Amino acid sequence: MVWLAAAAILILVPFLFVVFVGAPFVPTHNKNLETIFSSIRLPKDALVVDLGSGDGRLLRLAAQKGYRAVGYELNPILVLISRYRLRNYPEATVHLQNFWEADVTQANLVFTFLATKYMKKLNKIIVPQMKKGSYFASYAFEVPDLELLHKKQSVNMYKL
Image 1 (cartoon, rainbow, N blue to C red):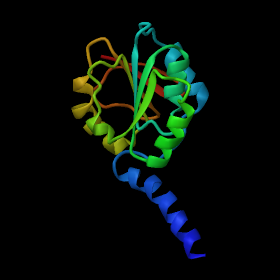
Image 2: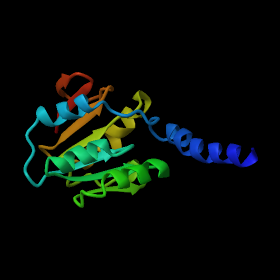
Image 3: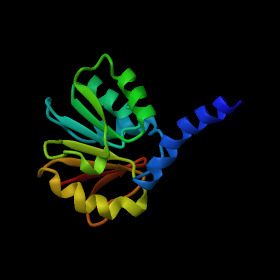
């Protein structure tokens, strides 16, 4: 019985820990992911970056569309799930890394689902690194001080 409790703790801790850095794991609905790509035009060699990539579903969709995709995720369990889901997509990778340290300088599209209290920090740390003409997509929450390009379903889209 003790081993069962220990196993439960080992599984729950990574899911709870990330709340202090960004947001809990909540999968983005597939229809919302499709909205992201249907509402903008990306070059064929586009780089899509997912900050807090969760189970890798955005990375997989980006790879299926022929884009390079890089995810950053702190939860080691979700990183393993993502790597498994991406095993047939060599152009998609996920890093076990804090996304506040992510390199987004070459990204054509950056996506995140982040709690409101972190949006100003995002606007100070991540957005200034992005190149002109790139897109930023935020699921559910708006980014302060950025001009909204459009909102479809729960996706807020910005063009820098």
